[in-house]
Image (cartoon, rainbow, N blue to C red; front, side):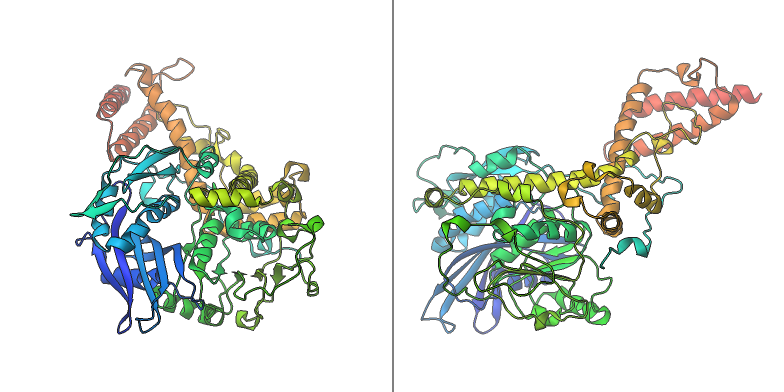
Length: 623
């Protein structure tokens, strides 16, 4: 599928509810947008969220849907207003930005700017917005950009994207004796913003503003985020998304890193979609490689196939999938789903105010979260509940409090030091930030604290794999040349050997969350190796090492001539066998360079000169 602009915007659409035909795609711009009938149907179904609550107002959320052999993202601003003139008693309409790039923070801010204007001027805004985005400069990774939208500006921290995909692999490598197979016993643990002003208008498909705006300073949350710009979805706030459930974040990290499937169920499409995106980003810098749908509906074409596989297997060995939903029917249709995070669907009853001395114990750190009795009426809340594999989700009673239902044993532990670093709310700050569209400072700070911690936790977790990403030894006794294959010097990865080595790691070298039993730690690593994220991440890290070494060899080749290429490191001239091996290495390197999308012709000519010199030497030595 061809992207029409550098920001990946495929189309901008409007969706309405028609009493006769249901959810309808009212308009798509551009008209020639490359969207299949199935994709248009998905947009229509997903852009108007299901909810049992008839709340008025605007809701922003994200969805992801299948399109041909890939996926597209939809960024939605949904408006619901009471309207007695309509049969259903409500006006319901959405504007959707459809893209190939999941720039969450950017398109949410764009919709906050143009949303109010859209509901004034209607569909002509779709063309104006699309043409506006097309004029943006190309995104620059790891930078904060100010982009003009409808007479104002939005700031956006462009993430450092490192795509891991078969299509981008520039070099094929295979190391002898490698094995990623994990024994079944290793998997088992001990117990099992801105708004458009009314002055902006749309004329002939263009935004018309009465005066030019001065670019604003970046938002406070952007300043914090830009200090550690990472991969996609890191802009999703972990604190703002999971407030009140901070203690569960370590359990969610475990589920994410081990490739466990989970449902995020919430009464709001905004809440469940943010929860899915936050969950998939918890394991940064490891890219999440499972299927994920920030907002998913019963009418989506993939739901039927998912439900069929679920019913057949009772969700055993189900592909790693994370779903966000607002429909409690999912508990019945997917009742054996391995894990579920449930945000309260019930309105909390009125309770006495919490005494100041007990204000805000983050994540209810002092509560018992395993198989304990029910909490007392005003006591600590039991967030995490371990359920049996045979337990059906629809048999779990509703709760006024959030709960994490999991069939997995706990392999990590929360870090109380991090929980104590979280800043409490200040009412004055919230009021001020609500006026200017910024995030309250305490929320931005807490988001940054949690984001930094889980990124560090993942990096520490990955450290035992570092010996596989460098020069190990010349165990095959390969003669070094400017064309040698670096993979011959790298340590082969054998899962069983690696897992045995985990037992020797001192607990003092592990972050607090991983200081559990050796058997739990071994099970955690075994499940990570078996998860869908591991091999793509491992291959990408290997490719980085290979590319860095190849760059050194490329520079070395640029400095030697045909005579020097035939000289061994000890100063002796190569024998015929060494020349023949070198000839094969040069031919393979030339073929690899020629296969690049932009081959370096100068370097190819240099390598061909080396090849001619080696070929002549072989001919002379053969006489």
